[in-house]
Figure 1 (cartoon, rainbow, N blue to C red):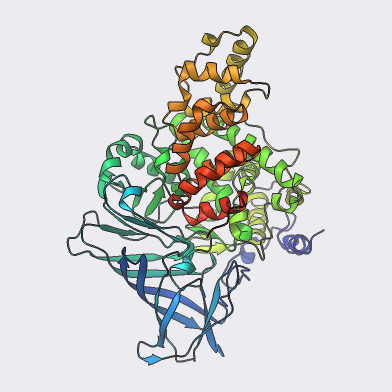
Figure 2: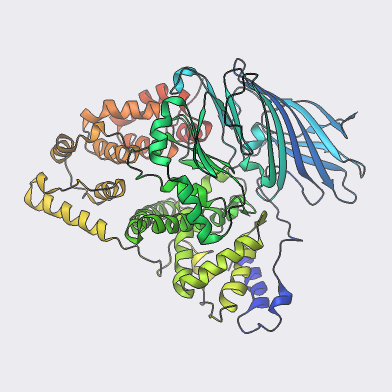
Amino acid sequence: MKKITLILLLLAGMFSCNDKKDMKSKRITTDNFTTNDPHSFARPHEAVIKHLRWDATIDFDTKSIYATALYTIRNYPDAKEIIFDTKDLTIEKVWENESDTLNFELKDEHEVLGQALHIPISKNTKSITIQYKTPPNAEALQWLSAQQTKGDAPFLFTQSQAILCRSWIPIQDSPGIRFTYEANVKVPAGNLALMSAENPQEIDSTGNYSFKMEQAIPAYLMALAVGNLEYHKTGPETGIYAEPETMTKAISDLEDLQSFLEIAEKLYGKYRWEQFDVLVLPPSFPFGGMENPRLTFATPTILSGDKSLISLIAHELAHSWSGNLVTNATWDDFWLNEGFTVYFEYRIMEELYGKDYSEMLASISYKELKQESKELIDNGNSKDTHLKLDLQGRNPDVGMTAIAYDKGYYFLRFLEGLVGRENFDAFLQQYFAEYAFRSINTELFLLYMEQYLFAKNEIELPKDLFSNWVYGAGLPENLPKANSDRFKKVEESIDKWLNTGNIDTLKTANWSTHEYLHFFHELPDSTDFNQVQELDNKFNFSENGNAEILTEWFLLAVKNEYKPAYYRMEDFLINTGRKKFLMPIYSELIKTETGNTIALNIYKKARQNYHYVSYNSLDKLLNYQTD
């Protein structure tokens, strides 16, 4: 048994189901809770930031940010220094209390963590100011030329999760450390600047913008975007930012943002961030979405024209509770952010479109979970199939797998089945209220769950629940099974086509994106070139505009060396930066010598369009050496 599991079980005994008489006096809080974060040099128990005032100039010519960051700090007794996380920053000057210049020391560089910035302090130190600049290749920043955007204007956006904020702001870059912030940002005239804060809705001709975030957030939720953008209001608390060339398409798919928000509030309590806006970014954005508070970043690949991919927006909205409001204390506890969010996402979609629709989403995640769990175990990484991860010494991005998202979701779905939806919803509302604007780790959550979900409702905690689900490898035998009638009809349609050889038996007129994805997933390995060609002739998949469907089609085309799809695939790979699509297509290509050559030729053209998050993984996959 792992040591941490033993400690958990011993502590859990304090809140056993047979000992309820003093439950109210044994309130579980984070007031004295300190987490040792292996991905930050900071020592918050000695000195910690509480507020940031950031003054910055954005320079597209040099691809650099020139900034001054003033931190209000809390220093505890006998603290001699405060430590910040940095990566590749040029630190020019440091001073305390806005007057006295200080010496500072940048420690040796760590490949993953960057450099620790040590600054001496005393009991009289109330603030620290750091003057610095970013390099053109800062990992969090993507500088896009006019040719890389929809319009004829350059663009800048950031991606701070998981530990990239330190590459554009010296910061205590741990999800367990929260701070408020304000900012003054100067950008080239004609651009709109936006942050994860209160935002303007129109371009200021002077290029000067001010921001304020009054709710405390962790560093990974710091965000900035600069470009030729406009705003469209979709409701009292919701709206869309996008390049003018993208706005009409964005409105068509995202017009229901206010309804999403109202449904979410009915499920899990008041939205605590005042405004929920979505920024549709250029195609190079590496993720589907990023839940920056007040300003969700979204990939344009969700704009399918039929709203079939907007569950991603439900996911990012759900993060306003699970992640932004109650945050995983370290990246080892990532499932607390993502598992809850997937569960909440599917509940929102169920309210909007019905149970069978949400079951389609759950069925797709079930398949992806089984596949990724198997791959991790087969590759000798069985520990990475635990919900509670051990990422020390590694980039926390390696923990961003289906385990955190989908095994986490199915764990919560399993709990709902044990205690009933009414009890589970009440527990989640209490949990979000209790830990609002705090961080929590896995062990503390499990203790809280035992007390306020099981003991409170006088339900017995199942034996081996934690060891099977949280600390166990692979997937539990009692993993719930999603059940979609619509997917069963897809499978029946496939069988009819393959048994009769008549492609006209495939009736797809009313299929959603999810049914098409299930169709591709269920095609047998024996599917051959002629059948692939027949599918393309019938449905023109190679010219499909839906990125999810295109990705599955390209995988099928590569497996069968269906070359007519390759020209479209090359265009897609060059002009799409979403890692979710890039990794499987390149991975399939490199399985053959010819495909590997094709992959490298495309990658040489495409790499400049990718964000660090994407090309960092692809460089390793393709064994690509930069000059």
